[in-house]
Length: 153
Ligand code: ADP
Ligand code: MG
Image (cartoon, helix red, strand yellow):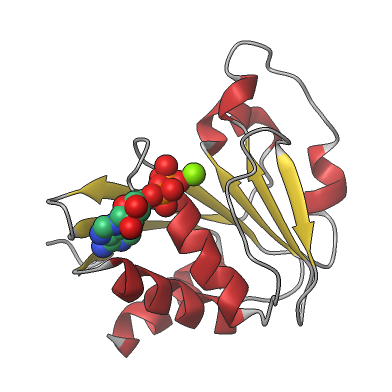
């Protein structure tokens, strides 16, 4: 395992990790999540929501592209995989420049619209209960967040 990787052993473990990440975030932060269908991107987002004190149930925004939740900070949850072929700008910067936390599933489809600083997280399937989570920070803030988070474990 590389230094920017963590293996989780259950859904709950992934959510706890994401909850800790949420405690390190600041207004305007952008998190991108990559991984195959069923890897755990939405599960990770649920953990972030829990960490932000979101009370509503978070589920996949597949049919809406963007869902907004209120917590200690607003949470904007996007799944942009349906933009695969369109390369459409649906006003992403309004979210990225906001005071909320934006989590984007399948952000490689909108890579041109991402801000310069963000935290990319890749989740890969190991077995039915295990996932390998790889953090790729872009910018000083997220380098700090990642090293603090991994130091926690
Ligand atoms: P995605 O959004 O990437 O398509 P989901 O989060 O919707 O994936 O689904 C992940 C599925 O994998 C859930 O059914 C979850 O219970 C299961 N799972 C099993 N082990 C883990 C783990 N370690 N971390 C995250 N999810 C896990
Ligand atoms: Mg999902």
